[in-house]
Length: 326
Image (tube, one colour):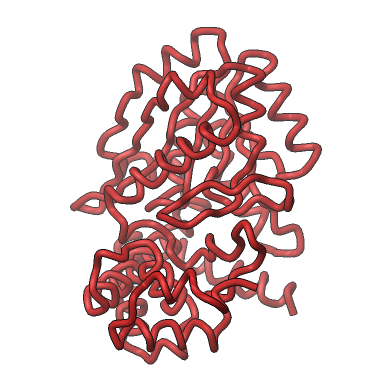
């Protein structure tokens, strides 16, 4: 079944890549807008977005949460549909849609300094585009989660490596390649908002809720003392994209594990808050906490939480009370 799904996605992406970019994204946005008005019980991605918005933005009332979740569903559909062109078209077509690269000179200076460089990225907006921008500057090692049983995986790898970056898997071989690059004064990037696989990783706050984060980041910074940049994208009017390279605080170099990872997640949160609707809220980032699995994303519990939120119940009782984890 997984193989068939992979083939269906493969042919869908190939087909979309043959259409004009504006047609592809308009079609995706329209379908997502329509899906946003279906019952939440029928659309799991929209359901997860509502839950994540409820958990992360307690200052917003329920009606505003629903409005923003619908908008986020449309923006995420835009992002995912656009990857048919990012992965399969000439990368120059994608790079032509980049309006501004913020702090490009600072990044080039860091890459030329002989000191290693670490890029911390996230699932914000068109997150594949910054990899193409970075590849023009340096042959950075980029860690990613391969889907080896999917026909789509070779397209993803081909697209991300189109301008010079080198993808490595999130396993021992990938870690070895990343560390070797840093040893040689090179650069390495990863999606730092990913849920780490190991259960030994520490938990730190992210939008008010503790989540496991990759301790590997602290080990890299403590050992190699690299330049550290947050790398992100922001979709702007006119179908354009702004790419941001934002230097992390120098103080991170001397922080212990807990404070450093807390600062890292706070930095990612600041980027998300710049345009919350462009973050991929369909990702179940809060599925684990310090006490184990949370039940927020199981359909019966999800619908129960949403009904209680709609009735005006206090958010803390929804996400921190009995039954929220286990």
